[in-house]
Length: 162
Image (cartoon, rainbow, N blue to C red; front, side, top):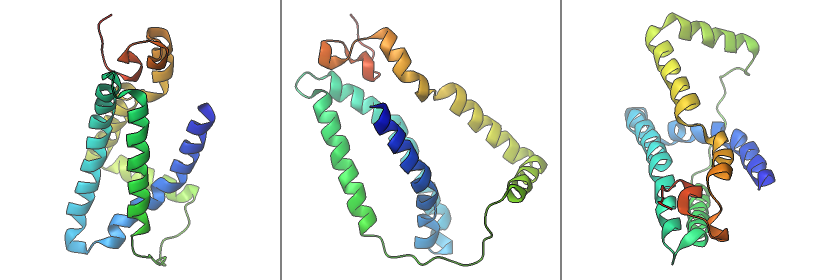
């Protein structure tokens, strides 16, 4: 399981920057703001609703973890199909290669803007303190037994009474 998570994280570190280029390349300048907003909103909804729905599905005895994994596999297949239907995008010339100098330039830009600095610090706070996903396996190991071993739905985040 840890190997699969490591592979997923590695592939995500490659695919995430690539996926961020899709919306600006696919939309006209007038639709870009709405497209980026919709893209971010769908991510936030998925991040909030997905785990809650998985907990509910897992807690239903007739459904369980197999149904969760089946739904995940089906949604992944739909995503792969959707990406395969996107038009080919040619590389655009212009941007320079990332370097330490460009990172320092970006940090100086953020420091000059109180609004951006506030947004980054708020996001950092929410990420570090509000979304500690790296701790979930450890918390679950100390709190409950896996559902497959006769445990409760707490393993996947659903509060259950004993």
